[in-house]
Length: 186
Image (cartoon, helix red, strand yellow):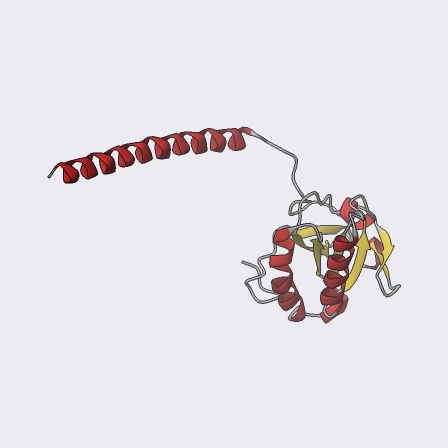
């Protein structure tokens, strides 16, 4: 009987300790939520309706990619080989781009790398190989022409741009849902 009482007392003590620690975690999560909610940072990419900046570069195959050459709705994807979410999103982007109306000519994928070692170079090469099947691929540094034109500061970023009636190139979707069929907006 004494052993049973000791066991129950031990379990009660452990449950109380667990409750106290859980309440502490909840309190910290609320504090972090308030802090994150109060931070008003700059957007991590251009938003819908924003005009795309000027850019001129070329693909890994030497094809020109420039602001003035973009016609019709074009899907733009920005990926970094050092970004784990990019690795997760890449297959969905490739599948979505494969179904894109207009095919490869209407998809521009940018692999952003800053020369952080051989492992990064290998991953960048894998990204380029995978994306080249469905998109025109540009490799650039973080301050490259496409990333600057779209004000991309977070990866992965998937946007759609199109010409307005006045000829300006505007972002028409700043967070393309890769779960919907190409050409269909949520």
